[in-house]
Length: 130
Image (cartoon, one colour):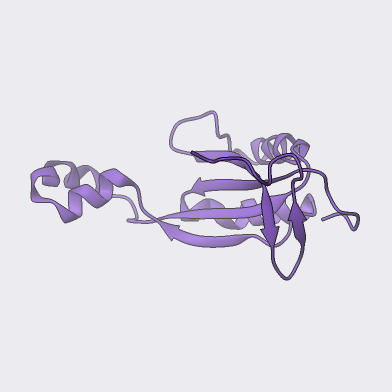
């Protein structure tokens, strides 16, 4: 992140297959994106199929794939990074416009307090989220 305080920040999310994580993290490094967190995640369909017998018919379709995805998220202060990331990933055949690749999206941050940065979006800090 830039040393001066950013005016806007976004939380960048990627939900992908585990096999794509290393290439995505390498792209993050190339674009100087840091501070990412990676967590196991599971889709609603898979959860329903395993937890509720009525959805068990869907289970056979899912047994061939790994039960978890990886959700990667990090704060960014430049939305152009998303475009640059998409271009860089397409160069190595990770194309989010194609099926079964995953999803990538951003969410605006109104406040962030932590060890790496403190941030308050003055325009949004009192916004009602309802």
